[in-house]
Image (cartoon, rainbow, N blue to C red; front, side, top):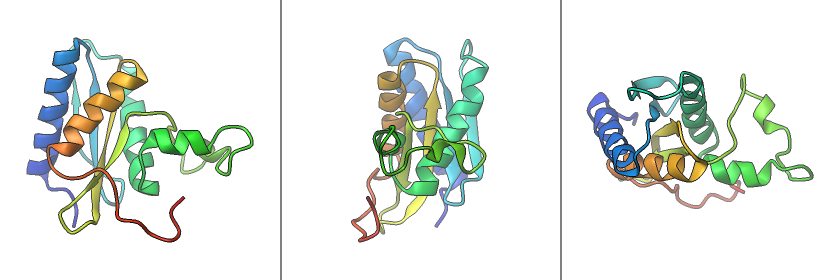
Length: 144
């Protein structure tokens, strides 16, 4: 099942509220399980460059079914995924992209957030994802 527009809007609103609480301006993207943009929100004052980064964080999380920060730890020099950020027309491998998992344990989409420190980006994305689902997929033998 894909994330619905109502869910995407709820996730964006929860993320936006967390960004306001942190005193920062964010770009927030929600994609469906195919990586297609479902909804996007750019807060007043958010960097233009963060538009692309937020969308790529969401796509990265959905393409690989894990948080972008986890992919980042695997993609360091010498790591098993070194260079992965050059695939799929560019990925983002630092925190701020989080899968959205439905009640059946299936990935319905992902959220990507950009505009502040990676710690704030991750906290804002987590608030959005948790507003409509879980953030961890069930164990699979092929997952790293």
